[in-house]
Length: 69
Image (cartoon, rainbow, N blue to C red):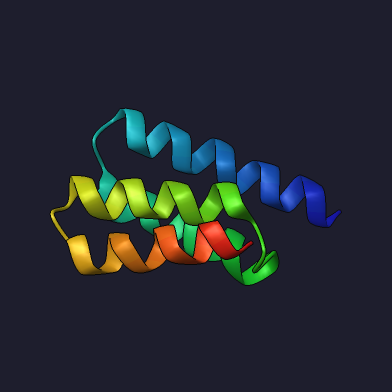
């Protein structure tokens, strides 16, 4: 059940990313990191999204967390 929820959030986040809706996509990856805090991939995607939004401090923090997962 948890895996299905996480996969659903990944799919939705990826779709929003492809549409350029980066703020909304971040919320999907927020959900994933809440459900699975050690998800290296989710933290890396959040970093990418924050970079696209030019929120570089937040991107850097996400990348740091991804490296520690």
